[in-house]
Image (tube, rainbow, N blue to C red; front, side, top):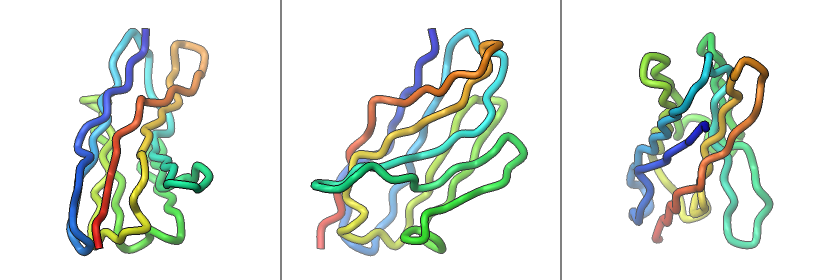
Length: 118
């Protein structure tokens, strides 16, 4: 069974930083793309950032220059460094991963709350 365990959320003042982590465990053959989505209060879920197995990254326009996604393939872990946080970044952040089982299947974590106060 594949599990995604997120950590690092919390309350921070505007302009501050947080680092989210997501560790993926289970009987897997490999992990392709990993990423983070978020759902803010009263908003639709949106992609925040994604990173391929080769290290190519993609960011939402709203976080470019402020957030950095990275991964440690040896640890099956993906990170999201969030700097210069804004109140509009307040949301539940979800980790997701395209896992090779050997067939490909997408998994999503339980979510971690990030609250940015003004």
